Image (cartoon, rainbow, N blue to C red):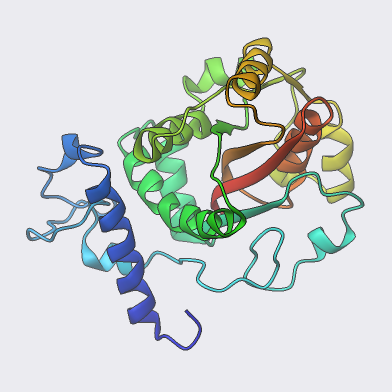
Length: 267
C-alpha cells in the first residue's frame, strides 16, 4: 500500500474487515443492533461498521500499514530482532501501533472488565492476519491451529480470563481454525514491560512447557493428516521485544517440527 494516502489506507482496512465478517456469517451478530460506539459511547448514526465504532474513532486507529522489519513487522528499524541470537518463530505481524488510545482500549478490556471489547480487538486482528495469510498462501497450505500465550494461574484467577485466549477463541471462530491450548506456564514471571531486555530473556528462560493435551493434539493431528511439519499461529495482545513469543516457539520446536508464527494486536 505504499503511495496510498492515509484516508485511502483506512478505507481499505475498513472494507477488508467488513468483508471478513461478511464471509464468516453470524460472527459478531450479537452486537449488530448496537447504535453506540464501543469506544466513545457516541451514536454511530446507522453506519455499517463491523467493529461497532463511529467513523471518528475508527479513523484514530493507528494501523500498521508499512513494514520495515520482516521478522516482527515493525514499521521502523528493529534492533531487537537484529541482536537476537536465535529466532525460533518464523515471523510475527501486529495490527496497530501501541499508542495512548490503544493502551486505553486494552486497559478497558483487560483491567476494567469490558469483555465486549473482544469483538473490536478481534476484528482489528483481521488486518494483521491478512498480512500473514497472504504469505502463507504463497508458500502453499495454511495454518493448522491457533494457540495463545498462557497466563500464570494466579494471575488468571485474579483477572478471571486470559485476554490472549479470548482473542484466539474469537479468531478461531471467525477463521474456522481449531484453537488448541498448547502451552502452560511453569512458574510465575513478573510483568515483562517494565524489564530490561537482558532481564526479560533471563526471566523467561524455561517459563513455558507443552501441555499434555496440546502434545496429544499435535501427535494425533500429524498422524491423521500425514503432516511432517505443522504451522502454528500464536496470539498475544502486545508484542514488545518478541522475547515471550520466541520462548514459546523455542519450547514448541524443541519437541515438534513446527513453523511458529505470531499474531499480535499491537506493538
